[in-house]
Length: 193
Image 1 (cartoon, rainbow, N blue to C red):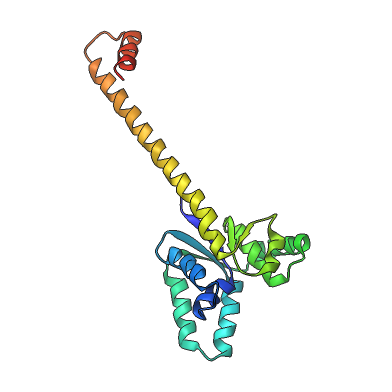
Image 2: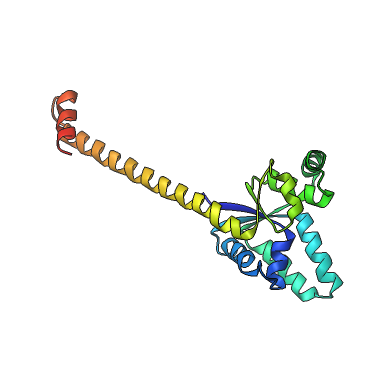
């Protein structure tokens, strides 16, 4: 049960340019992805926007490093602009009146199954009915608490199942060569707890 975030262009830019006040939160989102604690969904629209900036400022080495990171880190899921994404983007645009690049980002997020879109673009709140749109700081608080709660619940459930399995094994062992009186055995087991 890994966290899954769709990451907008501005999250990468906050980190690249050390833009305050978002830098530290955006950096933490990308670190969670890099460390395998979360999955990052990235639309090819985001990649295109970032590459445009790298080319504009002649930062070609940095662009190549960025693309290599996306290609080689298994924690990033790249969503390509195909017919399915295009159709969904049209639906999103019609419903929300977002600019087409933003509609493509939302559509890519939805198709990839990312429940949260992390962004600092206020316009994207128009998609709030389709996907949870959170700033990086919010995304670190709310979903992380949900994730931890879910992980703890899963662990408790697994421990209860393991304990129940051990009790059943013990009961089977006790009754292997004996005529089985289920009512008696169940009462003994219940009373011994």
